[in-house]
Image (cartoon, rainbow, N blue to C red; front, side, top):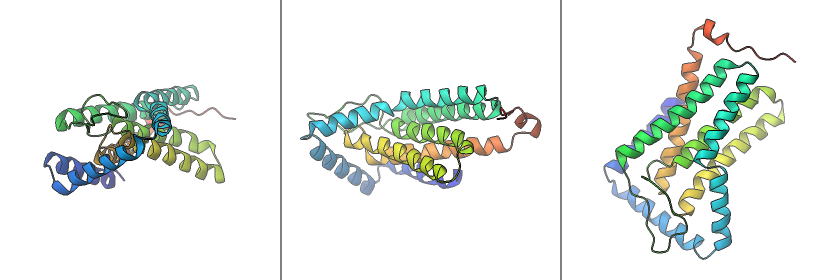
Amino acid sequence: MATAAAVPFLSLVALVVGGWGPLLSLDSAVAERSYTWVRPRPELAHGLQLWTEAFGTWSMRIVCLLTAAWLAVRRLFVTALWACTAVFTANLAGLVTKLTVARPRPEFADPVSVGVGPSFPSGHALMAVVGAGVLLLAVLPLLRGVWRGVAWVAAVAVAASTALSRPLLGVHWLSDIAAGASLGVCVLALTLLAWTFLPAAVRRWDLPVRP
């Protein structure tokens, strides 16, 4: 899974840095159409802004840290460490990529919303995937039957809708959110892979509370 997520992410980095025309044209067309559709609808714009803030970068960082604290209380110490590692790795990788690519955000004469910092990749998309993924993987062992499917659908829906709110608000290009989402999946997969290779003596630090 890590390789499957890394390939689109690295490909998008190369295409954006190289200024590949078809991708930039698609980004521009989507940004213009999104702006044209959302700008005359202030209620929609307000709803999108509330949603993107509710499940935004800082909200999902807090979700990850609270999930780690909850896991530690349940004596799942190694899993809690994984959750902290995932959120730290995601933020570091996102920041390094943003500063390296240094892509400007979309600009409009009368913007619907305003973003800060470089555009690529979308930090909201990145952290929405990582936050939803960390919470999902923490609660899945407690769920049975149809509720496991409900949890998966909810996690994907929150991550996807938060990511898509960014180009609709005119603060990110479409390829920004694709890169952010794929980087998020890659971080989750790589940190989980590292967790599975921990020595048995370390993994025994997970001492779940028995019912």
